[in-house]
Image (cartoon, rainbow, N blue to C red):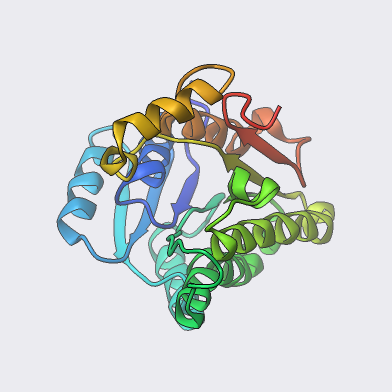
Length: 248
């Protein structure tokens, strides 16, 4: 028996990287998966086809999670097709790194809107359905940078720290209705984005991690499956680091 058989999951920002890994893992565990993307329609359709090969329903939707009205429309589209939503994974995110003295207002606002306001938008839009069901698991993808901060990422760190506060508040508000809300804080996860980094820099980062390696999208996705499943029904309001011991 697959852990998520019969469940319906929404993953924002899933056309590549961690989000893609999460979508694949959820489908492998039997969940129907709706995922959003912002730009690459070809990659999105390729992923939808891949997910369908797992014997589940899959739907790719172009949607801007930072847009409140778009989030409302997205949830309406999902409910029209699937009638329920059991799992919500807020993963959409961007970086616009720079030292504070060089950071523009636009780059600060853009990161906050995409990374943090999107979590509010989606959670607000789906809340009514989850309350009606009296069940649901919301998983917000934060970052170890949101826990410890990082030079050159004041905007990103602020957005990811905000997600942690939001997660804990939602867990307190919705727990009595059997709706759980947790956050995952990935550390150095090796994806397409890190492939562009200087190999020596990557080596130094790996050496600074107790497990002596970067994480994979699967490392994050496996925890998502656990938190989405009935194996974690007494876990809410938590922030779990997936960082190879980086913050130990």
